[in-house]
Image (tube, rainbow, N blue to C red):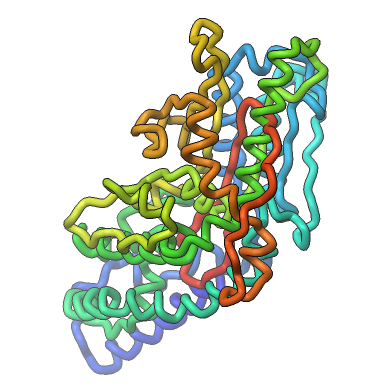
Length: 418
């Protein structure tokens, strides 16, 4: 909000300066004259907006429709577990999703809603959903890397700034260009406006600016450093334990209502991007083997070259990962399979030969185990030069049929978590 207020004030200054110098303003779009931030006058941010509420509510309805047998039991907080971070947007997302998931299952109001529980752990100790907040080595790494990331962006921003100055006759700065790009994304995603700030840029400029965003996510949250995703080991370990508990419940014929059927988690891009990396999603060619060997990956290819790594795909608003455990009794050699859905679509796993439907033992041994040999506290709280990659002694069993991760936007110019 502050950034867009500053942008509004500076654009006003640029137009007044041009008028005082009797410069032509014919090329300046009408909307830009007198433009004010759509959030002006707003004193507090951070809440889930109405569009997000609807998105999560509808998502809950679709999930129940996709897995009717999974949600056919009476609600109990130990059967359908909803957890969120202590950030209000995340718990609001969990509530909106749960209202859709359990709609018509209760007696409250005309929608026959029912009450359900959403629990959170303290931010200071939540190493499953806020591992990035508790990881001292990661916070040090990110602080040191951010200036370098900004340097990588500068040539693109300077080139586009020169084009904007030439095109519209206003003395835009590099910061103006960054803020106008930020405004473009805000208008397009939240306000359904694509012909104002977005219209200032050519398609090639949009592609280049998207690449700079992708670069930032890659370096600071993704495959740019193994620490970014290895700190998510507690979450991956929890997924495996939930699945193994579900398998035990099936094998030992636990009675309905006595075991967990779904573990639903609501967090942020800072959680889900690393988790996607632990699964090896959105890699190119032989890169899966590189991350298994802890080798650094090359940066995403610059347009017009194609790339799998796109922040708008990896971490859109309302983005989600779902891990579904299936029992296939007719397959005697491997009766349990894991499917990974990203934003509700099956996605190939390089660790399983490019399949999105992977035998559970293969998923555990090929995808999870190479990460689970690492200990979170060693990775995060021992100084890097003293870190020894000691294997964790036994990584236990697993829990629920699937996990859901919801996150906010991860393209922001002021580095504030959304």
